[in-house]
Amino acid sequence: MDGILIINKEKGYSSHDVVYKVRKILNEKKVGHAGTLDPNATGVLVILIGKGTRLSKYLIEHDKTYIATIKLGEKRTTKDEEGEILNKKNINKYTLQKENVEKVLQSFVGEQMQIPPIYSAIKVNGKKLYEYALNNESVEIKPRKIIIYDIELLNIADEEIKFKVKCSKGTYIRALCEDIAEKLDNLGYMKELERTKLDIFDIEKSFKLEELEKNKNDCKFIEEHLIKIEDVFKRNKSIILDEQNLNKFLNGVKLNIKKEDGIYKIYSEKNKFIGIGILNSNFLKRDLII
Image (cartoon, rainbow, N blue to C red; front, side):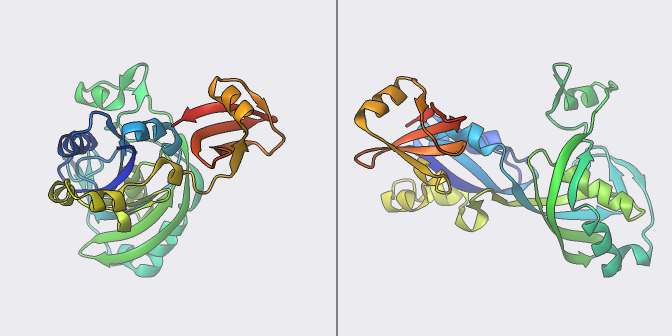
């Protein structure tokens, strides 16, 4: 089996847990994932199967969409509900006025610098940030450039703010929630997080692990939900190679082709999908062979 399945991950499972369970359910040796989700987060987890595991590098750069809930009035160590309470603050009525919240949310739209949470897997000097935190060691965390493309208020209730955000890779929603609370002149942490989209992979086309277990022997179910490797690149342009150039391409020879730079789907003259090529300065090189 080669391709992608979109799992709607439930709370309590790590991304690694889901990979292990899919491997066991489908009896597949090669299973991976793209775009890690924390155990307390839910939603779209892209599972790569067979030759689909080669797609990871193409997916990590893509934009994501989340629905998040901020709980106001508390600051926590991990910036989510798993952390210990560091501080508390009363909430005034003006903070939760719709016009005020919407104004603050919109102020985050655009390119900006974000300081990642110390409870994250980013490496500094060869060690993950959360390891510094667990050892009570100080470390300088440099801000990173992120982009918030769109942010929309969904609901305000019980001192909680629910919003939808589309953002670039590398955006930490936990940090964003705390920053939003701070701009509202309060404290806050991320209470809930659901990823609804990772590039073309939408939660509407996902299913839960229990459904996979139930339908693991149903070929029609698997066929309907398995996204082919070719379909991942449906927005990319194609290049058809004759037999002579195809052999050169497969052997790693760069081909002189006058087209705009980019990632191309490569096909044989018989319209067979071969893989992916990178065109740069009129030279096409092999990148992924299926």
